[in-house]
Length: 523
Image 1: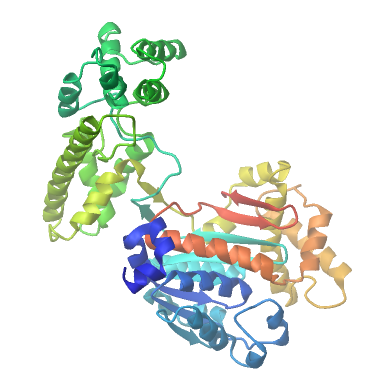
Image 2 (image 1 turned 120 degrees about the vertical axis):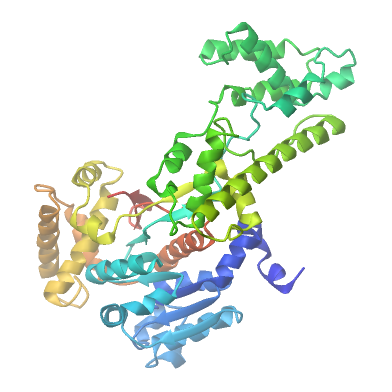
């Protein structure tokens, strides 16, 4: 095993070599390297990203030693970006690291083109105005962006990208692609060679459940006008029909068939989500279309023609009780069908690329194979601009959350995390940031929060006094335990975005350390 494979062995088991390669090619920019930013970047450095750039114009202070492991006593008075960068590179010397001693807020204002060189930007501890500006810059440059903020016992993480397409979404639970309810000719021919009434009890015990269910489904449709079971009564009757074919109670293959009978009842064809993706306006390709949308256009053609309403076959079968001969033959049939579907898709993709005036071989075979294998699991994520969410959120959703006991805390913190920025803009400090004047800060923050609610169209809505008091008590502090947790969430989302595997969070993730809750708000 190569050094890299040994080094990253455990994570390679999660996102594979293609995911690791994407990480190693990624260039990550971190804005502000306090505890939240340092913890987020630490996870990505350990994961083996290609390069990091740390942007922070502040100096290390005594207080930083209590919440940031990326600085030490010798760093006090020195550049925070330089100190954090040095400590981070010690964790993984294969990662290229550099730092820039400049305020992120100033960089956003004076040098917006700076951000276009990165794969992804992690922006920590930014106020609302800078968030809006940076979001606009990153979208124009097509750079992925993750906001994260830790504030006392609360905080948020929010992904912002114009469009994020995922081929390998890795859903937790997904139905095997066996086509028991819609077998193709080769599978039907194989099934017909096997007799369920075989007299040899050993042979009867080793008929794969795929064969049993395809035969039973065929028998059912012949006596039910071509229809598969749909009602609860019919499904029970179908299971009883399968059970009736057992000749002894210890036949595991028939027990598996009864348990897997729901796979026969599943609707034929593609899901509504894949239908929606194939009907997306982006599937009408142009010379600027991404590889993903070119492949979706080919998928749409395939479903309408060779696929007969189905996506390309995945080509794998689960473990099951079976004779070795039957299982191997089944594997070969499924693999052959998947390979044939791949070749059809490959030709369709090449033809589309030719029509667009692009190199017909510009999309690699492994990419097309992965697309075919995961065609039923495609995802497209689109995110609202931060500016749109801030200026025109869903008033109905805000009011619903404020009135919901389970979500009122998360929505309260969402409002207050925005209110403290207004407070800081008006009073040149965050509420409770300095000793003295706590009662006045509480009163001012309450007024600011009510004004924000009114601006959002939530007239008459109020926030609990206890929550406002706590927000002032936080004093804009970054507690290491909260920063580490939120930094971990941010790095997890960054990995999803860079590897294009798993599905990133849609909405604003709110951490409520007081009530020990994590919730996602879609506004």
